[in-house]
Image 1 (cartoon, rainbow, N blue to C red):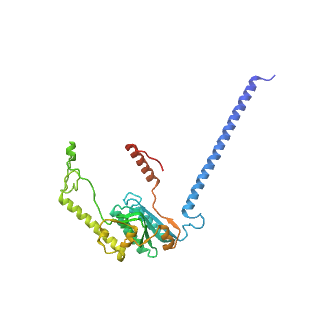
Image 2: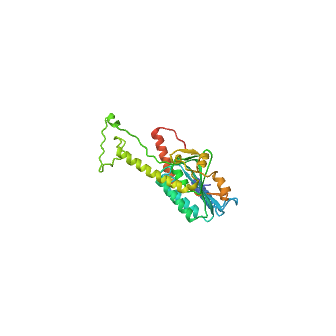
Image 3: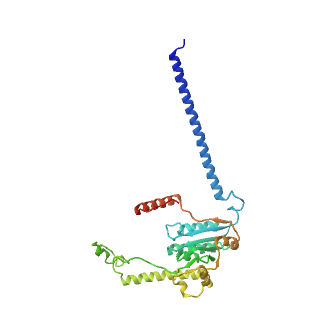
Length: 314
């Protein structure tokens, strides 16, 4: 006659064994899937690297082929933007140094910005053109190339535009506001302490001092004259002798050709195909890092919350 206690122990042991085997199988399955997904991730990263280096493709787009280097200069030119002199100049250097670069297209869509940053880029373009005389650099203008944007474009071998592009604005400005009497009306006392009679230069809460206004005008005139010399140096005899060119106004692409501010109509693809004769475009444009993009997105979210506006991730 069988012992019930023995049967119970056997049943419990088998149950524990089954549970242990099931746990081991689950762990093994998890390890296999983990290895699979890790392998898939590494494969994806290697494919991205190969594509970026031009090692894979259809045989037409390889960084090892003769190509036209493309650099985009977008937005306002400032020291902390993606179109800063540091970033654009680094891209220019990489493009000129690449042994397979046959020509360079600097595609500009900018309303201007810092004259210092634009001047750094202009200087570097002229230096690199002298160092690599066999590699031409062409500026291709998108919607707008004004002020500091044109300061940069003037260093190119040729400037190409669309008929509807806006070109020019060869001038300098300094803007601000005057709040004289505003604080007094609000019952607020302003305490401005300075060492140096002009340390509060153009302070918006005090009346405009004629001497300071004259000094600011002199500064603007000197920078404007520098701008004019850069344009004259870059465009040479192509530039028409018309004073309104330097008045700070903009023109359409067609009118800019008539005035000698630009040379021809054409897109980046047209220049690569017909002028450089290297149809393949290889992008050397500086990119924002993940940290910069994350910081910018956080700032946008914070601002939208503070202003109670809607936002979407795109």
